[in-house]
Length: 68
Image 1 (cartoon, rainbow, N blue to C red):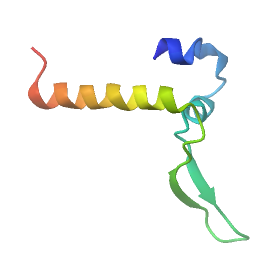
Image 2 (image 1 turned 180 degrees about the vertical axis):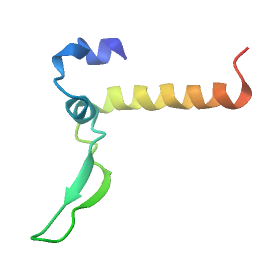
Image 3 (image 1 turned 90 degrees about the vertical axis):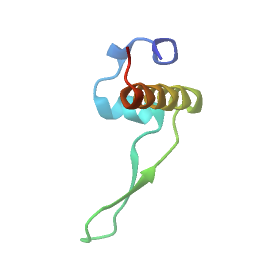
């Protein structure tokens, strides 16, 4: 992950980091109506996003079966 992202300090906010991975949600809003937040945009780095998903799956498996 560190190789894919590089220096994490270059992101001024967590929203910009989420955007780098393409994890920010689509927002649709028209006029005075409330905003609709949809699925993630997937506009960011696909390879880095897939590594993040793999790491999350591994953590879920380790949490389920217990890491000894």
